[in-house]
Length: 388
Figure 1 (cartoon, one colour):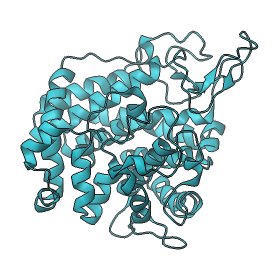
Figure 2 (tube, helix red, strand yellow):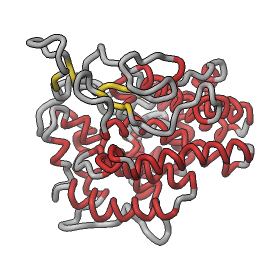
Figure 3 (cartoon, helix red, strand yellow):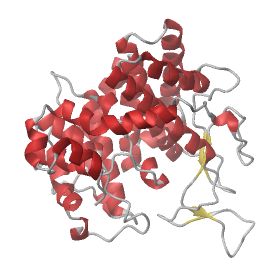
């Protein structure tokens, strides 16, 4: 199990559960993360924006402003090297085009971290630096990204884009969340608010009406969950209450009842070649939905279907395998088994909702700033401060 030992020991001394429960939970979260956030922010302040226009995707059917990525698990056919790619589930092809995805992850990480630094210090220099990157992606005509994902998760020789590609914009969630917090704090200009809300409104319309978006919304596994998670976060920033209501209904009537088994597991994830990582990822996404959409009138954390299937049951199922991964009762993941778990948002969001000190102290001991690409790609919330 990975630990941020020095930082956590400096705060809690002996890594006791009582330490986590004796402090106000939100302040505890901030105290665990503050040193790492400010250290990273010092580096972020020196970084220039890098957008999709910084890289030429030669196999893309779009133009320089279109995000492009290729399906992770698709490889050249050894029996037909010049023919269409073939699928090898769970095995990532290192030669596929990932530059736009890496740029988006970088963008998300920088904006989320700088916004976190602003919220911790109230120093506007961090907010100003974050907005520089936001403008490059969403406002500036020469460097901006088109508000669609028509060319994501392409497969050489098969298709120029797919609905499953919409999962790539999971990494715009923390950008939208940061903008929501910065607008709330009164440090966004009216022009920036207008332009960024227009971009996210346009993208939300595309992902809810284009065939690719509809296909992804109807996906039965973590892809369907991530569609709802993204739509909820983007809708909250843009003030689209109808879409937020739609996402609440989708969680209650589709995601929870159709994906969670009576024991709290996700059978559509455990049957994959990376059952552990996908189970963690799907639970993270559901927890983020509950964190985003729950209010005093509609608490999704408590919403229950069937034989007690709810978020508590989901976390209770996976938690023993966070404590002791070797007790995992399903096959080990074919790749990246050793890199999980990290500081998952379902632990911190669940603890903030329920007051569960065990979940919170476990979250405190895990890795908060992972660097492995696969882990970062599949960790939808990497900056908890902007969510609390």
